Image 1 (tube, rainbow, N blue to C red):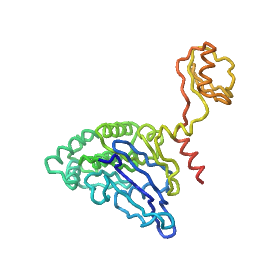
Image 2: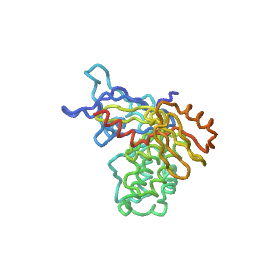
Image 3: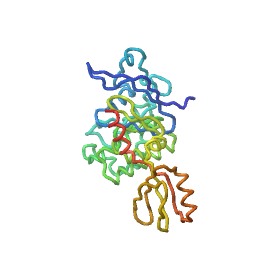
Image 4: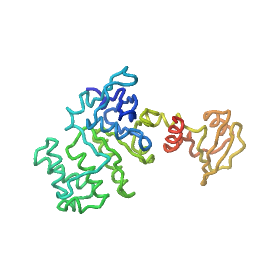
Length: 306
């Protein structure tokens, strides 16, 4: 069985003379949380809609040389819909249905029997903290509650792949943490997750690999840890209980408090600095290569693509 759950090759989508997605290629592997990132209008939602077979890609890639292809589990998307859960950017549930009933109905649409659909619906209402609202109409829920219900609707049929377009939209900090926990739980259960989100701190906390899209093109793609190393500033974060001596190769020292410092290096490697600190007999409580936050990487990559 292939570990490639989603395969997108040379994806192109045009609207008249405007190209929304331009020769985009990526793969999503079994069991990972894959982040699809980019500024507004970058082509993320268009890409997701093509993966979900809501939109069709144009037939050929750049200059007609390569055929645009999309597959899920090695098959055309339309043939595996029951194995996929989808949280769309535009929310929409049956507002006059009861909360429990709408989940049961959506689970049965995906092929579950009535008993299993009801059991799964109750389980998911408990997971998202809406069990006490099971007999209320969807229209009676707050915006945040409806967002959590929509997430439950995408997962109630126990799909192998979940595609979540802005799952944190409209949630307060407490519920953001709750949804983060649910995504972690889904991954631990072996689910594969494609996550589109604007909150870089959440992406950083959840994703194994990412694709940054700008103007319909892939700008950054790969393991998040590798990308952070690629954009790492030439600096070290150090914690010590002693005063820092003058150190060759250190351009700047910034005190962060509680004995923690950021040292910007020039003409010395991180290993060379560590040796110098040891030679000075400095007590080292922690020592790590500093990495740039994902939001800074995002801004730098998008600006560099202009």
